[in-house]
Length: 619
Image 1 (cartoon, rainbow, N blue to C red):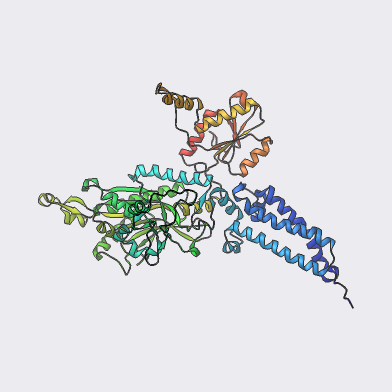
Image 2 (cartoon, rainbow, N blue to C red; image 1 turned 45 degrees about the vertical axis):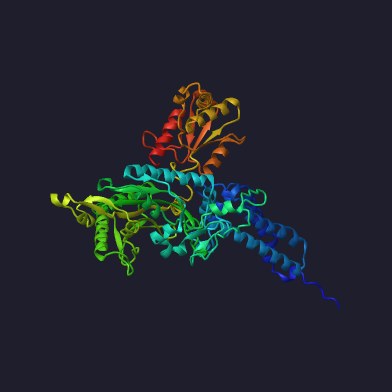
């Protein structure tokens, strides 16, 4: 005897059937619509932040929102059609299982957006808006390059502006920028002590055709066998085995995790006098450190990063002054970045295992203490937490979650200069080495070699980490000088006069003179005259775009504000006739009367001056 199928009507309560067949499909359709066509609104709904500008994700991050939409659309399709048609309890259970799968898709996509399960769990702190701003601005991390972020154009613009800001500070503080190799021979790392003490955190590289036992704990690139064509089968450059063997360097190499050995080589490249010191080198070369995969975290913990790395070679008597200047630079830079209240200072003293003399350490710690006192900033002591080669000062920042990150650091090093045999000539060398002075003519007449003190310092620390902290602080609403989207010109319509005027304003703001460019290109190429160079100018460095879409001005302006543009510049018939532009936006400065203003009319030249002043004064 066949059994009667159990109906969904009898198996499920009425409120469950109503929720599955009506409320959830409608909610899912709304969510899918937002994910596909109005992502900023979706971000606002998910984060309950219904005010402020929210960036609109570009195609590069569309996967995140299309995944969310797919989960919701599956809900809507199953709930709206199948469950309303069928009244079979068994079929309903199968459909509900599929809907749970779509839930998993949605949750996974959302977790991608907020930065992981741990951040999702803190519902009072996480923000999809922050994560979306991160994706939109910076780039992405992927399995093919773990711990090495790809930067999108907007993120690259912010990165470069931070670097340029520091370069200008370096001029004032006496640093000379240098460029050093990314890879060095093993012998250099053995000389510096890194191969012995830092190998587990380094990437070792083996040259082609050279295979042998690697240093324990290091990560080596797989050597290519002699029979293997390094260019692949499509590009067969056969120069003969003997020639290849003769050219191959059979040494081991290491990707640099820090710049100090290279800067030691630069110091040693010529004879130095005490009159030359201090010598300050700065370096933005990329660094590589073998962080374990479980420790990687967005931009705050990566394997490839850039550091505003600097090294000061100074006389012992100059240490205190150099530390003081470095702390001053930290205060200036963090003040501009508006990080002045979110960091603390810590002095780390001699650890149990150290190299060097105790009295040397005592003098160094005393110099750091005096410099910290002179800075006027509160500081604490971390007893025994110094590096094995010298004491240090750490600048520690807090993120929006209260988690602390070390950013800037100032470290004294007496040992690396000795390992590299660095020296400078000075009178009374024994007193000079202790940081003491004398007026005795007999002692001053005696010159000799003295090892310099090396100060390792970084103000931003990892630029990538600082960018992550900045985006958490700003929520993607960047100050004008850092904003990669500083202004957009919005046209009222697409008449030739308006489009031509908009292009003219754009070229003025960005500093493009097509006529001068063409004159220089053709005039120089023909060798006629160098006079076209007189009219050619450097671009202003401002970021300005033009929106000529056939949308209403109000809609284009609203979307521009949502995308994070600092200024919206409207160009229409009236502006063309009067030779003006109408400017609005959150970055618009106050008026001459000191009152805030929603919009202002001005000439393009006045707008250029205003924008340049805003960028120059870090607004």
